[in-house]
Image 1 (spheres, protein in one colour):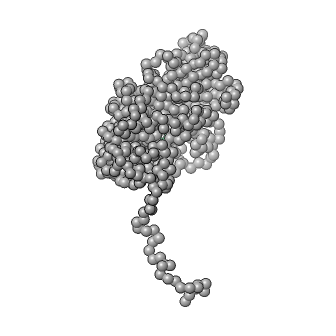
Image 2 (tube, rainbow, N blue to C red):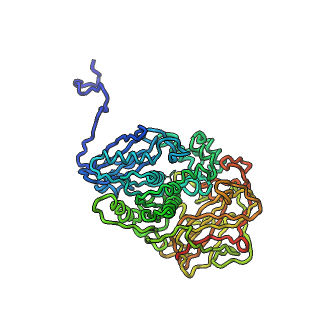
Image 3 (cartoon, rainbow, N blue to C red):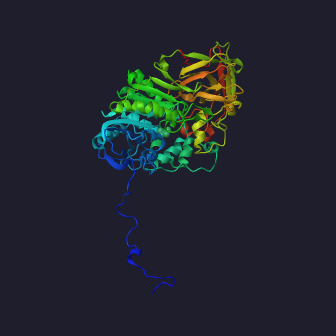
Length: 618
Ligand code: PG9
């Protein structure tokens, strides 16, 4: 009978017997200025890669801009907007101008693509016995695109930052003839020397969360669980190997390969992209681009550009260093922390330099847009500088800025030998930013390389050497080199060297900067590699040793009224894992008892003239 609350009759169209989700539903795309399709592009071994293609309405003879990514191709055009410009993410807005076809592809094994995922898959060869790599996948993809996408003129440009910058560089090892121009942006190039995994052998702990994120699912996996709000406490709980094990990271094959190869051996050398591009140089015009304060990949672009210069391909290779954090080229860049720029340096660069540079190779009749050999932002002057002959470090005369007695710093040759000592305690490593260090705090991660170093300057395990107030500008064009003589009571140890611009005590132009200790260039070096990066050796306790390593590349002017400071310490935590300071075979698996205090003495003058060697403007 009828339910008591029923009034009226039940008719058939009130009742569902199938699914409310139609088998095939297409949204009407009225008013859309583009079409978007998802395709599976077959590679030479039959594996199909998921690819998103956005073609402006009425496309005719348009070039293709390709990005290959492990970070979800579909996420690059996340918005269901009828306007292409609104549909894409910030990095592509300027390219979505109706004159480029935009293509994003999931690399093998990630998100919608078939096949096995291998972390920054090494090229076919000793480390990759297979028949494909990211060079062949790029080649096969470009071949398919120029043959199958309607409305293209058959020319392709590639961009992408970081991992995606690495995929651009890999495409250059055997470029498809249709690949006409490329921009590896903040590319991951050498994971041991100075990009994501290590810096000169010191391991970057946040990689463990990156590993669970990237390699526990084809999509996005979880970060490791935290039982503390402060990363400083979390990473003090044990060696990186202990923490990896506690979180199942020890079961991930890439961690197993990485942790079994802590030194710069064949494993790392054979996948160093700067070595590869120089061994197989391409004629494709290439813009190697990175951030001045790139907190993830500060090594790769510069070194690849230098390698191509040395290989004789300077005419088609360009270096760009913007005043940016990692990948900020794809966002807006009015400022970097407290440093304020003239305008949006990223959007202006994309619109006024990058796109015209690409278009001259991608479009018939586009005006020539010659680029200098190097274009590097000058943060002190707040403008871009162009260099026709930016020299690679090897060709530079370096001027030593010596550590002096009484914590002085200066160009004059120091007198007799002296030293300054501090106790480095692995139980109390020097933090890289003020605590609490909260996981996932993007703003602080993006700006840690410009953080005011006063927060550690007075620690008893940090030594700072400072020049008198400058009366003349000191202009640095290139990569300073730390050349530190030191002894330690331990048998291993890390050396962190920071080159700092100390602002005047008051700075009315930007009051926040009064007395600011702004790092211009800093890096860390693991002492066991002082004689050989591939064959580490214990440090002889109590014997002065030389630690010489290159710092990031800069174009900088320290102005009159400012001072230059060199700050030295033995940890930078927890960006970098702790050195136990006792020589053990593999620091990843150091035991609690291996971590020991050490007294470190930084030498100056005499036979041990510690200095930072400066490539001064010529
Ligand atoms: N810096 C990131 C990364 C690149 C390559 C390997 C691991 C991490 C990135 O932003 O893609």
